[in-house]
Image 1 (cartoon, rainbow, N blue to C red):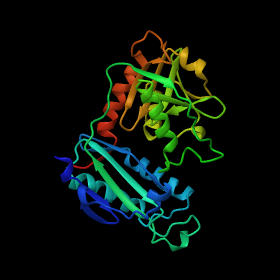
Image 2 (image 1 turned 120 degrees about the vertical axis):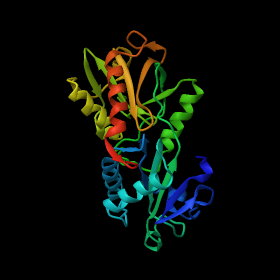
Image 3 (image 1 turned 90 degrees about the vertical axis):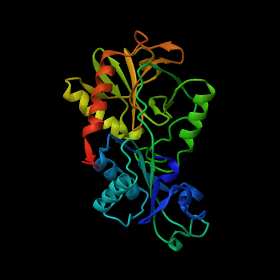
Image 4 (image 1 turned 60 degrees about the horizontal axis):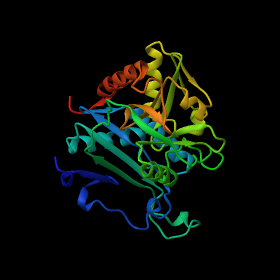
Length: 292
């Protein structure tokens, strides 16, 4: 399927991607005033769909936007986007903005109501069979006292700037610290380390509580691997036996070098390999099968 054939959902209607438009006065465009989700489809399976919808509605509640669809209606709309586009392997982005209306932060009462967009993309999972290089960037993660990182907000400017710094450095992953100097997350992924057979990851209050993050923690526990949420510094990254990231499109990916420090043996470690495979299998099965 060509990209031009994809159909985008906007407020209950479907439009060809080339003609899918919202107003320049929409608050998501003017202020980044909205929330979104990124959902993977693997072999016709929408991975962890209910968990994504739950987080979308929590994010909307936290920014005080009332989504005019029930969770079941949202689920059906996302499934229909996948079905109409015959999207066997790809990515779905539901996005909710506060709506269209006049400029001015104070003029929220004049908005037309939330804008609901569901965007499909043809994208393969970014599974890696080699280790990635990473750098700790200077951009810090926005702290929860300013904007709770558990809200998946359309305001991604700090992540974008971190990604630019990462790319300028010629590495594949940018790692952000929080304002206290603790490890937070990558530009668009959660981060884990392995030490002495146990897995450590930052507390979710300082990072996005990723859906894939949660799934990998569960899969690790089911495999008998202990997972601990803890504060970590650069020291913990540099001296770890293994480091890996998790994300919607990344799945599980190993990091074998951080700031020119070789991690462990310099190759993908055994626990990371096990979780890479377990996550691949889970993404084919756990969620909603659209085409059965």
